[in-house]
Length: 445
Image (cartoon, rainbow, N blue to C red; front, side, top):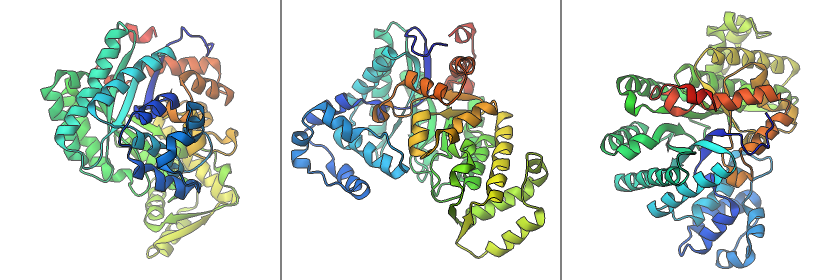
């Protein structure tokens, strides 16, 4: 595959609708918005970047799109909190009303089609206190925008909607409401294809969602025409735990039924990146990981060095009453983490879960200091089911071809990249949930 070829078609399966807004468009949106929500952006940005911005003279300071672009883009290595502080500028400058959502859905579909994306899944997240009336209006508006774009492009591009639920909220209620909306509205039933969990990952272990995954799976079998995938951001941001615990989270998400795993950086990141550091972890997380190691000791030990059962049991006894522990990253612990990662990758390869790898996003938010440590390299080596996506192409300043080019520069062969490109059309939410059966057209992409 020659990546720059403009005739090549791509499926972008991990993409946030408003994160796809280019700097020039957001600048125009902000200039015409009579009531920007500055409070969402100003304080977090000043706290994390140490720069105070005067909202009263904002568009004098950033009087042209290029100056604005330098403020807007997130193209450095930094924790999720720094990324969110930049993303807050989108929230502040947008109205996020049905009219705007309809326009953005139509515009982003057309823009990304011009970049080679003929199938895209776009995620949208509502405020926790959003009324049912507003959720309905905004969901319908997004679907209408996708339908308009599809019509204008004569069916050459398809966009689908994924709604992001709140990890800490009433996600069962959100799910039931959306399913009810699908029953009432045929347009929503057609375009809404998945559920996502994103935003802050720390503090919300996947074990809290296990029953929910099972519920969605049973409903998908019972009502195939409105089946939805569960897409789960996991192993992307793990500043509260060690690499071993974060890796366990990724495996648990796959084994419990998540259809696609967002980022999964902890699964493939080379532990060498942590050599010499000391990781601080919540005591309950370490306890869960040690119990996991004991329970699966025989299986895991086939993949390399792990602590003896006696040592694991002794550590469990020693931390039972500790709220936090420190884990030094020694040669031994790095080797043990690599063993656990290899085991988890092997297990995930035997599930139906697909990893959504976003090379630029993973490099920046995952703070991959050395690109030889990038998780995508090990995903490829372990023959995991993969897609390559853009995540937030507007704020990262990227597009789908650039992400494939980055994957190529990481060492993935052109044959493998072509396989990933074709496979992505088979990993759409409609197919993974059972709503749609792959056909010969899918195979010809």
